[in-house]
Image (cartoon, rainbow, N blue to C red; front, side, top):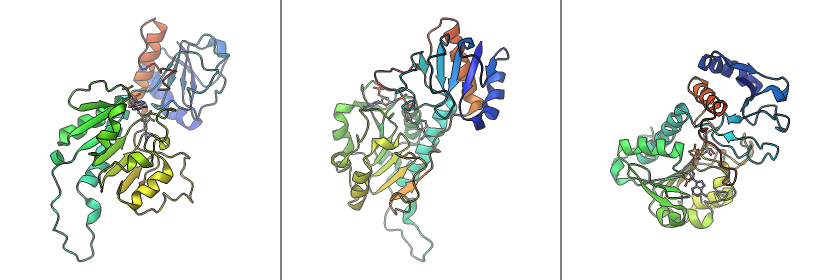
Length: 302
Ligand code: NAP
């Protein structure tokens, strides 16, 4: 199979050996006659913007899980698969579990200032309800890790489809779920339906002292509403990995805010050592007429 690689130039050195190791017959290129390619491995920071000349491409395999910058490209009419990779899921579950533990254990409440702060016994994980907004590939991996620690996890998804081991509600029940979400983790895709889903009204439903952790997309939370909500403790703290503009501009009020932790979109990376195999196998499936995995639903946008 002849595959065109279109992602950042810097990523070529990492991905090319991993992709070739995953399939020794792979013919992998950074350029060439568009009509000669069977598939494209793609990220929005790659060079292709017009997919029209790639008339024989049977699959465009995204290296990223989030495809909001790809689904809007009207020239992309070929089947599109997003990245679902064990390394990505493990990384996200670790990120969310780490920040959840910081919130849960009240780690920020201790300081080396000579004060013996032992008046509050933190609840056990079993007494700390956690909500995961979006229980797709990453939400489910996060739910499994947090459940293993002992947190009661409630998931919310568009469909409310059951997930083993956790209670799942549909979007229609979100308001009700928010009222008991002491820790709210956002793992939704960026679509017209999810933008500003957490607005002033919904943030005000959170219990006093709640934490919000958002490694999903920056558009999910209304920035102004978040800043206002933090003044009243709903939420008390936000851990944000994703933003409307990235990198987050230096003069943005999130930087230096005492109740906001900024991380620079590092929650979960697609790692070539695990994801190359996923990409190559999916392209093989497309070439052999087998059902392709993780196809993007263009109507839903994820
Ligand atoms: P996924 O498998 O497609 O799951 C998406 C979940 O969101 C599903 O449970 C879906 O519900 C739910 N959903 C979609 N629209 C909704 C709505 N309007 N209301 C309620 N729920 C809705 O995606 P994933 O692989 O878990 O990835 C999730 C997102 O994480 C990506 O889209 C990307 O934005 C982000 N991400 C961030 C990083 C990072 O480093 N910060 C890394 C990778 C990914 P149904 O199950 O009912 O369809």
